[in-house]
Length: 236
Image (cartoon, rainbow, N blue to C red; front, top):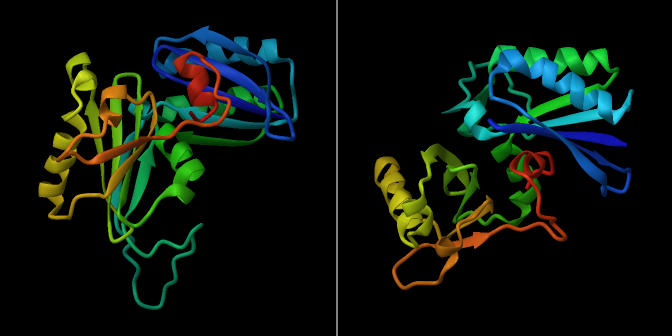
């Protein structure tokens, strides 16, 4: 059994996944105001209802709770960088609010949970869908009125762009292409062949239109309708 916790700025949700990878039972949800200082109390209520101990916990955070930096490894002569996978080019580094991380780890320890892993939404989605990527593709996640866009060139990450999404942007079939073009000009890179986009993908963005960059929505099989926090927990 594994516990899956999703944290958005409006709530948290806890799901249980069996050893076959299936989500079992209904999610346990609580509202949350996005303040790391109040998270511990919310988590105690959620984990108390779950009544599970000594199981693994995976935590997925909304991207807007994190800070991202794209950097390149600087390795001095005589040193070898070890990572999984080995980094040979720019990569995304993620910073979390210390109070948020401490709250998660503290409460997980109180309930005897083990091997706690904390990651932002875009990283969880990337790990799940990267096998679908081609060297000419870009990748993105739309969630809770915001977009995280990962720009690639020659199969390597070049930039990570965060953009707010309002209703006009989500209804405009050309908005994503304009956002992509702006990033291309800043990076001096070629247009992607397509953008693989997960999360709450605006339907107008996926329309096939002449002169626009193709956008493919990534949808997991048998994905049930659920709250935003529960979608985070499932990595959807």
